[in-house]
Image 1 (cartoon, one colour):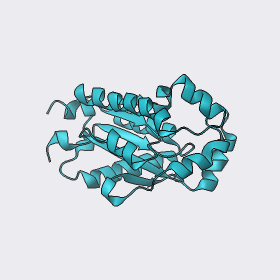
Image 2: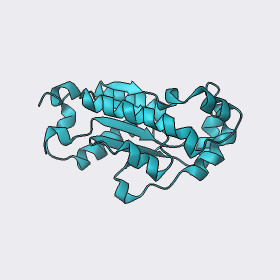
Image 3: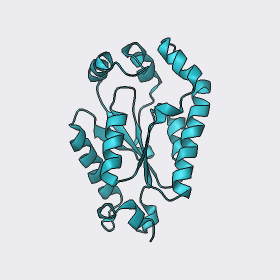
Length: 188
């Protein structure tokens, strides 16, 4: 396996409350790489809609997804390993985000009851529990053809990161590429 076949951009996906930010930050710390919170790319009008409990439509998400796609391309162009969060609810969104090579999606699979509990207890976010049903309804199931790393979102956060890296090692088995820091791998 050539070193440049390894993922360079990790996109943590899932509905609101699945733990994308927590896991994304921990993964980026483990990899000693950049972290970008996809929610920060939402426009003011999108945030207002969500605060008003109005579900976003494809058109609302278009510019948001384009900005995240640009973040991915910038990371790849600069050869900087990066972890990004993005709900990526639909197959078309996931295809758009993985159109550049060297992108690995990671889905945090978690039951609705736990998502509800987390959102009810979360006070510092515009996405409230009342919006969960619309996100679950919009989420298109992950298929094997998508080659997404799927992790049980009920595990402890450190165990989730360990599982992500374990599955990545199986997906990219030649060599011990995760033993090297991203900047060492990027020079090869």
